[in-house]
Image (cartoon, rainbow, N blue to C red; front, side, top):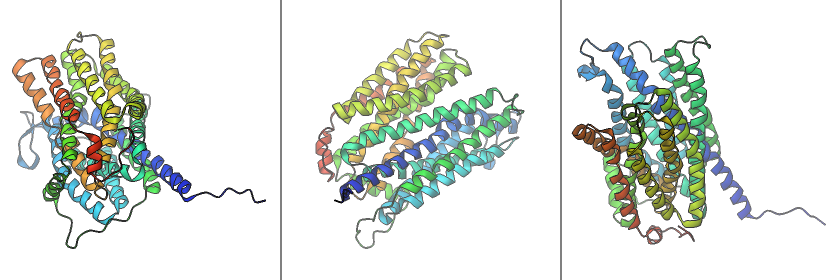
Length: 451
C-alpha cells in the first residue's frame, strides 16, 4: 500500500508563508545595523569633527554658500533626509500598490542606502559635504525601504499571526544591532592593536554597516514574492509626493478609525523617538556620565529590546495588541518619571533606566506596526504604510522641539525629559478611544479572535 502522504494545498501555502516570514525577518536583521552603529553611535560625532575641520575661524561651514555652524551640520542633514523621504515615500508606495512590484522597489531602496553607507569609508579630512550627502541618501533610502518592508506584513501573515511575526522582526533587528555594535566597539576601542588610526576605525565601522545591510538584504529579496495588483480604475496614475500623501489621507477619511489610530501612533511614537534620541544627551549633560557608559547603555537597550519585543508579542496573544500597547505606554510614563529622579554620577541607575526603555521599546513599536496592518484596506498596503512611515519618520520633530524649548526656558534637562510624559499620556488617551475591532471590520479585514 502506498503510504506516501499527500500534502494539501493549505499545507503547501502555510509552508510558503513561513518561508516568506523567515526571509522578511532578515530585512530587519540587515538594516537595523545602520540605525544603531551609524546614526546612533558613530556618524554624528565623526561627521561633526569633519565639519569642524573644514570650518572657518568663526566655526562655520558654508554648504552652497549658506553659513552653518559646524556643530549643527549633522542635525540639519538628518532633517533634510526626512524631508526627502517624506517627498519620496508616498510616490513609491503608490507605484508599489498599483504595479504589485514591491520587491524591485525594495531592492533599489535597500541597495541605494547600503551603497551610500559603505561610501562613508571615504569620509575623511574636510569632506563634510560628502558626509552630509551620503547621510541624506542613506537615511531617505532606509525610510523608503522600511515603508515597503512593513507593507509586506499583511500579505505574509494572517491576522492571528501578525503580532508574533512583527515582534520577531523587531527582535531580529535589535539582535543584529547589538551584535555588530559589539564588534565595532571592539575594533574602535582596540584600533591601535589592529594598526588603525581612530578615524580609520570609525570609517571601517561605518562602511561595515553598509556591507552588512547589502549582504543580508539578499535573504528577503530571494524569499519575498510580489502579488498581483488589484484592478484599478482607468486613469489612476501614480501621483507625486505630497499629492499622493494627500490622496491617501483623503482615502483614510473613508476609514476614520484607521486615521484615529494613526493619530494616536503619531503622538506616542513622537515621544518614543525623542526619548531614544535625547537619552544620551540627558545622560551626559544632566547626569555627568562618560561616553563608555552611554555606549554600554545603548548595547543594553539593544539586547533587552529583543526580549521585550518577544515578551510583549506573547502578551498580545493573551491580552490583545491594543491592551498590550496601552500597558507599554504606562510603562514608558513610569520610566520617564523614574528618569527625572535619577541621581547624577550613578551609572548603575542609568543602566536600570536603559533596561526599562529596552524592555518596552521593541514591543511597543512592533505591536503598533502589526495592529496598523489590520486597519489597512486590502490592496493599499504600501500606500497606507507610506503614511504610517511618514508619521514615524517625518513627524518626529515635535518631541525634540518640546525638549529643546523646555530646556531653553528652565535650564534643566530633568524638566525637559519629564515634559515628554505628555506624549505618552495623550497617546494613551487617543488609542484607548479607538474601537479596534470595528476599525478592522470597517477596513474590510477579518477580525482576529483577540486583538
